[in-house]
Length: 562
Image (cartoon, rainbow, N blue to C red; front, side, top):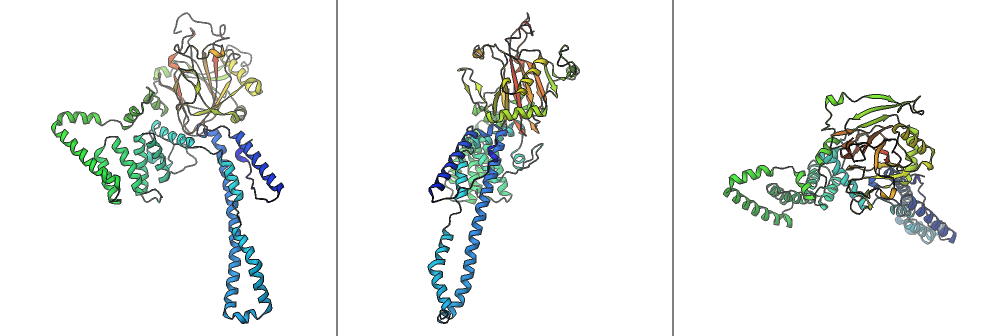
C-alpha cells in the first residue's frame, strides 16, 4: 500500500462520547499505519521511498486548501452580516426615535442584540483549523528529519564536486537530462552554505554564500540580509587564507552596516595581519615568491586535506564518473565483441541465446542485454520497496554492519521461495554463468538516494578480513552479477578506478565479472564504485556468488593469477 496516497481524514471535534471515541480510534489507526509504513527513516538515501513524501505533501496541500475554503466561507458570512448591519445602523441612527417607533424595528433590535450577535460571536470564534492541524500533526511525526535535510545538502555538494558543476549551474537547475527544472532561491543557497559551514567545509561555504550574495545583488527578494550572507562568506574566505579578499568584503559590509560589531573588529585585525604579512614579504621577497607560487593551490584539495578524506583515488574515481580518463586503447577496444551466447549449448539457452557484449578485457566484464524484462523489474521493485532499509557496510575491524557516508542507498533482500519471478531470475543467472546459485546470497535490490553512490570498494573478502563471510559458511564471493533496473538520465556509472573502466546503466541489462582468480586469490583490479546519481532514479539488483559449490563448475587453477 502506498502511504502517500492515503486520503486526508478531517477530524472534527465532537462533544459526544461516541465522537471522541471515533476520533481517538482514527488517530490510533492512522498513527499505527503511518508508523508501520514510515518506520524506516533516512529518506534521502532512496529516491524510490522519497516519492511517497510527494503524495504526503500533496495530501497536506489538499487539507490546507480545504481549511482556506472554510475560512473564506466563514469570513464571507461575517462580511455579509457586517455590510447588512452597516446599512441598517446608518439609516437607524439618522432618526433613532422614529426608527424605533416602528414596533418591528424595536423587536428586531432586541432579537439582534440578544440572539444574533451571540451567533455572530460563535461564527467569529469558530475554529476551522482542527481538521488541518490534526492531519498535519499526525503526518509530521513521519516527516524527514534534520539528518535527511543535511544528507540531501551534502549530496548536492558531492554532485557539485564529482561532476565539476558551478554553484550557479546548480542554482539555475541547468543539469543534463533534467525534465522538471527547479531553481534555488537565496534562502536555499544560504542554507546549503550554512550546512557546509557547520561541517567546517569553508570551500563549499564560500561557493554557496557567494552564490546567495550574487542572487541578492541581482535583485532577488529575500528575507536573508546581505550583511548576514557576507558575514559567513567573509569567515570562509579568511579561513582559506585570503586576507586581502576578506578585508575588501569587510569594508563592503561596513558600508551596509557601519555599526556591525564583528566587521569593525575584523577590519582592524585583517589590516594588522596584512601589514605584518607585507613586512615579512619585504624581508624575504625571493623566498616568499616561491612560497606564493606553491600557495596558489586547489582550494578543494586543501579542503580535502583539512577533512582528512580517506579515499586515495578520489580524483581518478570522479574523472571516470564524468566519463573522463577511460583507459581502453583502440587496440584493446578492437578485441571486444558482441555475440549470441548459449553457454556451451545450455538447454534453456539453445532456442533463445542471450546477447553478450564485452565491456572490458582485464578484468573481464561482460554485459548481457535484454536479460530481465520490464514486468520482472516491476515485480522485483514492488517486492523490495516496502522492505528497503539504509544500506550498510561491514566494519573491517569489528565486522559489525553499520551505515557509512560513502554508501548512500537503501537495499532489500529477496529469496527465491518468496516469488516465482525471483526463482526464475536466479535460474537465469545460473544458466548464463554456469555457477551454482544455492550457495549464493539472496538477490539484493538497491535504490539510490539524492546523489546516491557507493565509493570504491571490493566485493570479496581480502586476506586481512579472514572472517568476512565466515557466518555464511560458503567461502568468499567468487563473482558479482549486477542488474540495471532503470535508465539514469545523468551519472550513476559503475567504475573501476584501478583499470580506468566505466560501465553505464542501461535498463534491462546486467554486467558480470569474477572477483577471484581461478586459484581463489582476489583480483584487486575489480575494486569498483557506483558513481553519484546526478539526475534520475537508479535501481539495481545484484547477486553475490560464493565459492562453495563451484568446485567442478570452475575448477581451481595452478597459478595464483590465472
